[in-house]
Image (tube, rainbow, N blue to C red; front, side, top):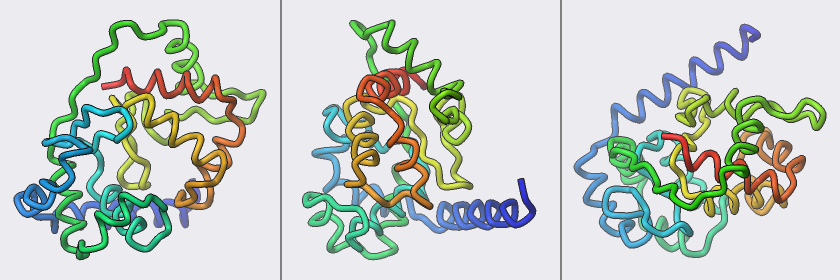
Length: 204
């Protein structure tokens, strides 16, 4: 790692810690009442169409909210939800969801072969396709890297992760720093995306 990259990473980590320290969990909980219909009362969504936010990094959540509000990340429903939020509200929401315990997903009836394929790709990548291991950025157990801005993926609904990867692949989602996720997703087949989504749902 170059000195410049190390400094940049340290600065991002310091920013994350600052945001977490500044966030008011109680105020975030009050604001989160409006989010519960989709994301669950404590950030554990019961609907696979909507992501679980519990245990996600505070700064990552605040960043997504800012980018929905700025139109950098596009979603009609979220645009309406974030419109009245202040910067303080977004930081508080991030702090609240980060403080909530992540609930492991039920895995009965899951495709064991698909999960095994996803595990190989997630943990080791695919040198032939020029794919780095997902674990390099998101951690072997899917906890992410808050200092670098990489989100936690553990126990996320497979359907949501699959949609997200496809959105990066077709560039309908383009708020990834330096287009890293778009470059990776462009190399993934539908089946590989399904496998990765199935595997990350098992992490907790």
